[in-house]
Image (cartoon, rainbow, N blue to C red; front, top):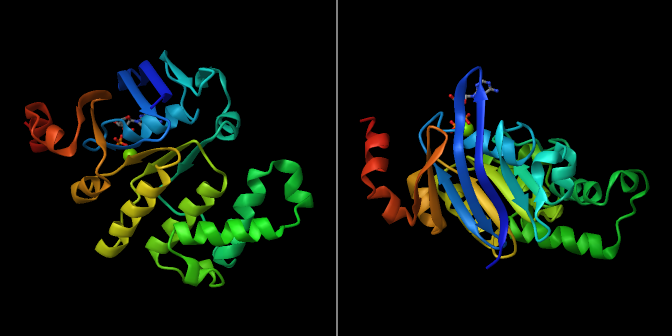
Length: 246
Ligand SMILES: Nc1ncnc2c1ncn2[C@@H]1O[C@H](COP(=O)(O)OP(=O)(O)O)[C@@H](O)[C@H]1O
Ligand SMILES: [Mg+2]
């Protein structure tokens, strides 16, 4: 598997406080990765740096076969280059149907001009049906998004990101506020999505991370504390100390 994203020696300080400290991280083109760590470990800041929202003080980030440097790119160019991010709070259009929300995302993926001139083709409708299947909302296609459960809204938002066909998908705490059944379905969606792209999932819920069944990166004080299978990292003494607050 080739490397899609390589973060090397990245650091960032906020008012003298090192939120990210000499962090290095790699992910392959078709890899699912969980990132865990206590509150304040730097997980969200890490995603902010990859997406160009926060600029690091030092380090390098190389992306794709051509080794593009993300640090010289704007947030919108990074998104155009295929890095999609899901925030914690869903931002779907509540009074539009599931299908309309997905269609809007598809339209946005075509670039600014198509927003004005977009006429959905049969293939576009087919793609919407396919996306709805991937996120488990086939039977809700014509429901108003405002009528969906919290979990279903999160899936719709993942579907809207998938419509843009990102090569790297970043997801911050998707399971927060979900029922156990919704969590289970969310792990299925993310595992499926990672068959054709790289997916980074920040999550607190250990059962959720275990179900993802992927390599885990543990962050602590802005650095990688441990990396490996969930069993490997949860047996690591430094990880145990951090989680028990020792
Ligand atoms: N924009 C900011 N300004 C100042 N401090 C920040 C900013 N963003 C994050 N921090 C601090 O950086 C640390 C890491 O935060 P964050 O990345 O949100 O952690 P996590 O997502 O792992 O809980 C925290 O101590 C937080 O208070
Ligand atoms: Mg966070």
